[in-house]
Length: 135
Image 1 (cartoon, helix red, strand yellow):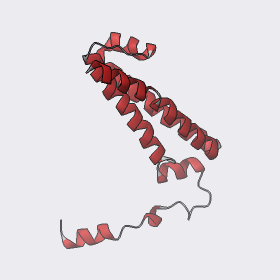
Image 2 (cartoon, rainbow, N blue to C red):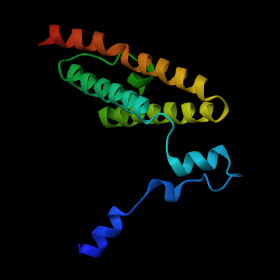
Image 3 (tube, rainbow, N blue to C red):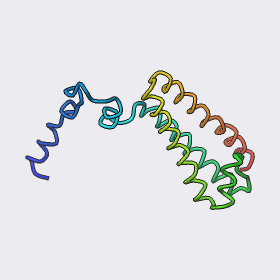
Image 4 (spheres, rainbow, N blue to C red):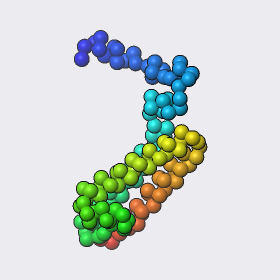
């Protein structure tokens, strides 16, 4: 990379891409331009989902079974890879739902996102406990 290219990268300012200059921008357009509303909370949902997939994989290797009946049906029909894809699709749909609610009421969407983190994280202590007895 040349010095001039580095300088141009260093001159980037987020405000240059802001929709503040466009007073008529819709909230949906502003969201697309600025990204997700609750990225840290969404990262927590993704982390909880990832831990769930990881612990489920380990428990399945020790002869356990998937406790979620829908995920278990996907597991039986499409194997472990299918179940992983299914679980991440659910996480993605949850994030999209939170963004949709935020279009109408951001406070309710934030509360919903926090509740969904708790729901996604709830099975983790159980799975970890089962794993402790399996080893």
